[in-house]
Image (cartoon, rainbow, N blue to C red; front, side, top):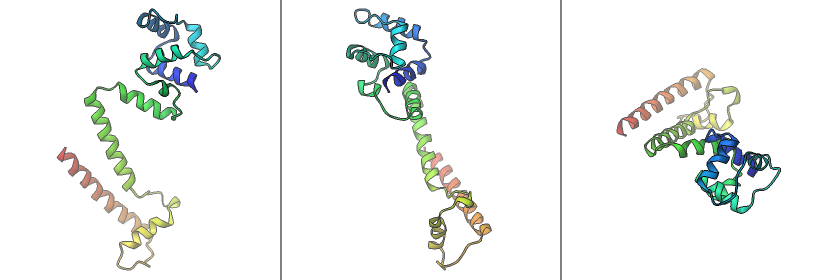
Length: 162
């Protein structure tokens, strides 16, 4: 909801309602007279701000009006907000790290065999000379450790190239 999004944006800038009201009135002196009570009512969805106020808030936070009505998960908004506050060189580092994490996540076979899927066993079998072979838990763990070590070496090799 709009109020929750407004509050999340304010808190991301570490502002109290009073500090936000002062900042808005200083930055936009010839517009709405913002005050703590009005902002609180908006954040708690007790009143809906006028479009002119929504435009000012979007401009203040450096986002589009649609972003104030965003339905994204809070964690995504929080991550986005932090990312957007970083300097470009730091944003590149975060992006690179996140890409590596995603590649690693998508290539790892879960070690928790009590929750393994049937397809995981078939994946191992597809690379075997005997596709009907049944692997023991010990064999699976050994294969996983060999694969993990190979992945680690591959990732380290790629790190050296950057």
